[in-house]
Length: 291
Image (cartoon, rainbow, N blue to C red; front, side, top):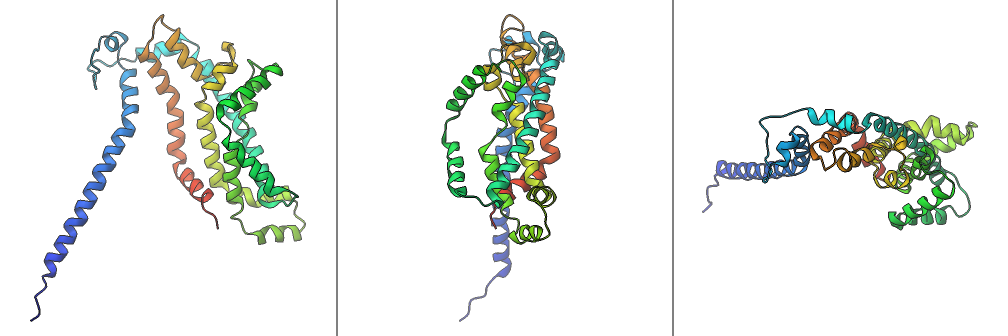
């Protein structure tokens, strides 16, 4: 005897399971968002707390009833933060521009040109990623010091104009462009550089935008190298300024003013990421997909 199947019950059960799965997913996503965004909230909250209120809190408070903008004024008056901001802008723009030229030519050579020992050279090139950054910093410091480039923009910029990872990312993207386009261009008498600028770079624009933004963020957040290579305030970057506010600006640590400076410095990067977030995702996905 056949059993009557209650399809409505089965459908309701499936819907309940689906809703439960979605609810758990959203709860986990909200929890993760809170964990990720909490440091930003704490940074902004601390920046609007008065110096006395912050230091009188034995137990940190997650809100304030008397916000103040005095910390932002203190951040710009205690140290020449605007000058450091301009220095950082110069360092970021020049370093990123030079790096784009270097990595584009290197990626094109490894992706399209044929020369003896290319594969071995690329393997050796990739192996540089295995060298600890501390060793590279020591080598760069000795080199820059020997060339008397300390406390100068060339000393800040030159060690940062190359990236093995960005060359690899761009090479993988270039190799996705069909070889037939290259051979057709060569038949028409197109030079390698013209093919690079007229064909490969426009097609790889999302990846180049991604690399540019990531390099801008990297330069803007640089701390160790500027701290090591400069002791002249004329060449300080914003990272030096934040540390100066904390150490020397007020005789003792002024965390609210330091957080105010961090908020001001972070705003351009946040805006940049929000504007180009789609290009970043597209560039990363294209660079990581072969074929």
